[in-house]
Amino acid sequence: MAGPEIKAPAFREYPTIPVMQPGSMAGLKPFVANDKVQEALGFPTQLAENWQDTHDAVIAKMGELLGKYRSLKVYMDACVHCGACTDKCHYFIGTQDPKNMPVARQDLMRSVYRRYFTPAGKLFPALVGARDLTREVLDEWYTYYHQCSECRRCSVFCPYGIDTAEVTMAGRELLASVGYGQKYSNEIIGKVHKIGNNLGLPGPALENTLEGLMEDVKEDTGIDIQYPLDVQGAEVLLVTPSADFFAEPHIESLIGYGKVFHAAGISWTMSSKASEAGNFGMFIGNYDQLRKIAMRVREAALELGVKRIVVGECGHAWRVAYSFWNTLTGVGAGASDPFAIQLQSQLDHRYKQPSHICEFTWDLIQRGAISFDKEANDHRIITFHDSCNVARGSRMGDAPGGQFEIPRSIIHAVANKYVEMRPGTTHEQTFCCGGGGGVLTDDLMELRVKGALPRMETIKQVVDGQGVNFLATICAICKAQFSKVLPFYGFKSSMIGGVHQLVSTAIRLGDK
Ligand code: SF4
Ligand code: SF4
Image 1 (tube, rainbow, N blue to C red):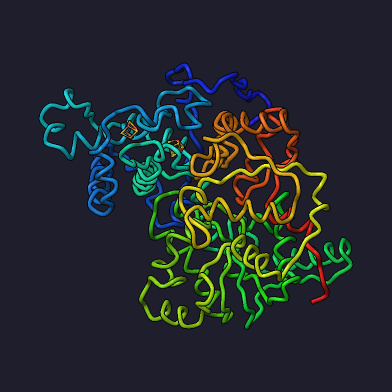
Image 2: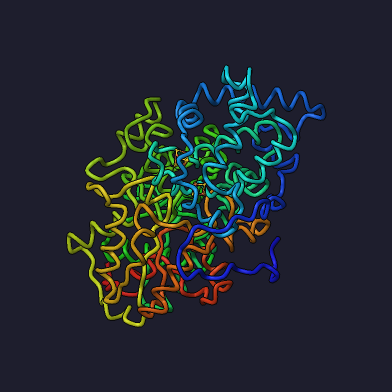
């Protein structure tokens, strides 16, 4: 539970395989969604009173998911228990609970799959590690499928490409569908449906916030930089995580986006309808929620008549935008319903639709449309944390690895002092911040602190060795998580910031 009694694990001298502490995290589960939260998403409000009814509902849903997601069926069958993934999960490394090994996390579901969906498991359960679905098993799922940040690091090391994140998503979808949803994620999804963003910030409050921001930036720079909302006919719609509107350090990046648009002379707007880039529908593995949230972006784009859609600094939002918006909403060229086709004809396809704000800024830099005083960042020695969903779930630019190179290229364009963290912990092998995938809640603070250990170890190396004092990232969740957990490891929370915070510091502002 949250509080000062949580102690960060000690830094390890060498990154060895942790000694196991069975059951060490068995008691940590996030708050369960109440009736109101479940009802708002159309899920059953609680588990059926009769266990047999719940049991049957879970098995039926599992059958449905196995039929719908071929990947899930393959993952259930393909694992050979080679062990390559076991020590690759930051939660296993930080908590030492063997059920946080990726293969063990999969086996929580695989054992039930074998019992009900394979001939051998039906006939000789004990021989093939099959087990009955019991209330205890369901509770175990709830516990350990909420101790996974769906970061996909383990899948990079699996010779069969088994993606534990997909198993976690299926586990969560099953749980929510029988009335056992997670309060944190489901409550946030409800706020997006009702108000438009994760924070429940209504349109007028957002307008006030942006007006205040314009005044602050004017005071700071002497220049009228706009942070526009709901501007009809703007060239660009920026969809950004709602944390950017007021959380620290997120707002510093929002200030930076505004400066980029100003310096390049490109008209832009944000939207009170699509005031959230995040999409927790992915975290709970639910396609309908994912789509419903994403549709707000399409509606806003159609209403405002924009030509381009740009996504702000948010890891999972970019994964959803990059990988799913095309078929979900028609941003891109996948969906084929009339509104999707209307949107595709409205958008300017000389540009990637959607674009990441880093692609947008990097393009302007390459074309010489914006310029910088790099020395303005000389008080900073910077390192870059690759965020999981950007690194392993998306791309940027036109070349493989663009999602790694473009943010780094921007940093090199705006600052002089840059240090890379240890190989094997960056790029596609990056460690999760410990707070992604729907675990960024205070009721899971112990998990978040412990799961941050491997990333903190690599930060310590560059802080001690090269004097790094700024940890740049392009994810709202990483920023929030690091702000909270850095002090547990003896670092200042102020060392975390966005790439566009660095851009903001160094950009030359004309009077366009
Ligand atoms: S997806 Fe990430 S958090 Fe989940 S088991 Fe794999 S490494 Fe651990
Ligand atoms: S690396 Fe893949 S095959 Fe090996 S134990 Fe892990 S999930 Fe199974």
